[in-house]
Amino acid sequence: MKEHGGNRRGWMRHVIAYGVAMPWLLFAPCLLHAVTCPGDLARKEIEGVVYGDGLDGAVIDVLRRLEDPSARVDALGTPSTNLASYDVPFWIPGPIKTDLDTWYEFNCDDTGTPCPAPTGFDEVDDVLEEFTTFVDLSKSLAQQPMDETVSTMESWSRWFYDPSSQADYYDVLFRLIEGDSSLNYVGIKGWKQRLQMMQQALPSCICPAPPCQASGGIQNYPCREGTFASTDEDAVDEFAEAQQKLDTLITNMETFRVASKQLYDDMKAVFAQMGAGLGGINPITYAWKDSAGDHFVKVEVSDFTIPEIKKKKKGGFFNRKICMVIDGVSDDGTNTWVNVTRQDPSKGIGPWRWNPFGGAVTKRGCASYSFDHVELAPCR
Image (tube, rainbow, N blue to C red; front, side, top):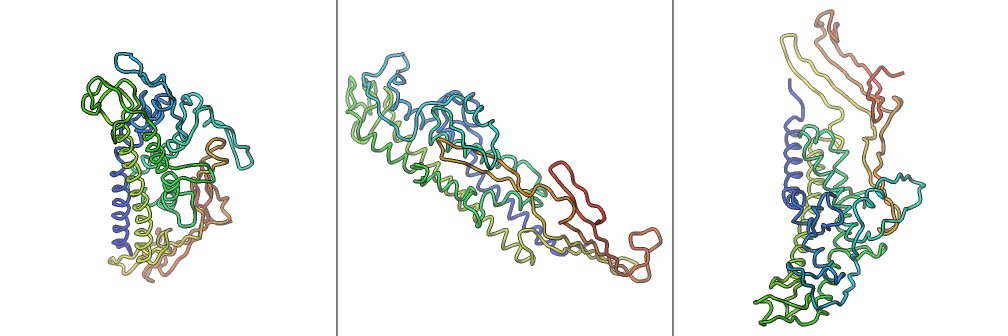
């Protein structure tokens, strides 16, 4: 059997395989390891939530030691002599995992009132929440067979890039990087700037054998010595490490944004070559030849809505609710039809076949479906 456009279908599999795999390979450290981006944003209060492993990530460790003097204790239990508190405008300790779980489990709908986030929910938590959803979607998509990925493309591709919306990850990741003044959101680039400002405000380091950046044994951390800055007693520049982690996170996010748009454009180009939109070839024709002669089957489907998961938010990140809703999830059989036309040699092909008398025969069916039901039956 010959499928018209079959080679182009192979191109589509290649485009999706490459477009899906390459961005995720770049994000692999973030997806698989809690000790790397954005696991560097993990905090000990939310152990078990995607990136949490009961320890603070590299970035959060710096922020906690700036914000909380009681966190400044060395390996032997000796506290720092610097008891000043340095306010971190985009981060505060908390909330605990159970409070987050309770908040996430609240029901909400289009008419619901935004519910206050638990105490301690901040911009860093908001970024992690976005990454949690992003990772869950990415992993589920990466694990399904390629044929399913291709056939369900319309339902998932717009999660990553949708030119008609600003709710996709192309836009969401941009907001996480650049900030959003309407939400009082400074963004990850803003974090870097504020970290630099706080570093400049630190006192000079005190240690038994200066320079402290060479000898360690720092007594008044957090402190700085020239461009060096430390949040504990050793000779490691934790500020530089945090800045590097944030730079890596931004680079990976930007790479994924570009790749998401490129994947969409590539898929659109392949479908244009097929003479079809993003929904695929419609109608599609299969043709073959055998001892009886030439045959073909043509299948045509009406316009229909593919179910799509959408994220809806209410309020800002301190007072809001996030809902995952499914749009276009059902049809009662009155809107979606399928026409199947078969053309066989006019001499006929036998009494017990689908088309016993030859020539062209068309049959029409109507589809009904919901989240737990799919049926194709004769149209009423």
